[in-house]
Length: 542
Image (cartoon, rainbow, N blue to C red; front, top):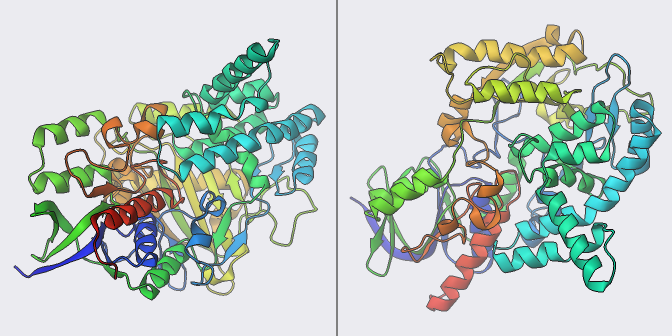
């Protein structure tokens, strides 16, 4: 065994975007840091590869919504490291129905309300304007909470100051205050469906917003999913961004920043165990190498982290309890990546769109919430949905670097699809049928689209697990239900981004607060904690 016993400040296990964000903060603060990644491609689900000749195809995420509302890009100087975002404006659309034109969501609130009025009526347009005014400060507070460690005190301060956004009929200084806080609490804890039914009349509009909210994972019938829909209000402040060159352009910028500040990244370096080595930690690799560090940040899946600790001799009973009490779930969805001759031509679009039409937008291809509910029910039974709920993203319409001249790239995400099918069918056999069903949903709203498909790559829940390390095919790592959020994610014992009984092991990644999506938040939290820890231990800076 080749043992490198130089003790560095930190080792990061996993080069997903949160692992790289964590390492970049450490390196910028002058700490010595090394990142180990099992894959040959860094970035995890925030990476882009050449699936088809001349195409830059995302392996996971495509649109970046949350990180643009965060301090991470500015604090790490990612624009100077080559990261460029294109505003997705329009940022979403919901297709036309037999009786109403498409709903187009633009950064400009007036333009959005005009589209809603045309499709759904004046009352819902006015309601949407009021909805945005009410939920913008709530969503902003929620985003601020994502970038700090989750503690009961912070949680109370974050949401306790939002009483002014709620109403009450109670009178008197104390009565009015308590009444508003109770109303606020009820609204934050409500299901997304309850929120929509409270605010709007049109099922067309409700379906669009429900499908937007469901991108967080849980069905909108679940408790406390209302804020996932409320996040839409922030899209009128800063819309989703498309990184020029693909989602992996964020990873490329992080790698350049990290290298410039002296950090190191090693790919094709799977880790097999994390174990104590006197007063620090040793990380062993599959090839026999080992590395030592004062602090180890595990930015991979929490179940993978527990396996690594178990291999290193950590308390087996405690690990078993954590495994049994963390809900990984049974998969969320699948993706279909297409190389095409043409972009989809959707029916019922307005004539006042920019030159790129709606191809900057998240195509929310659901016009009735019953489609969502049927898909959810099928997945719960271990079956394929008869009509999957789909999001269409055709960003080559605004970024021509993604496809060869005269060709286009279309990314389709679909929910809900179980990791294991109840009838025992292997995903290798079901992939083609499931992929065709996803394409059929685009064809339903853009007739003729399927004829122009030249290349296709289907990512099933199984391939999401094997290629990207997403256990159970869950792109959020563990369920985003209220019992596994904030101070409870991924488990009350582990919610402080630390492992009890293993001082010096920190946690990052989608398994931890604030959860999945392209945020960089857990990487920032873990990186700052590691910096503080190395300062307390008196380690010399690089």
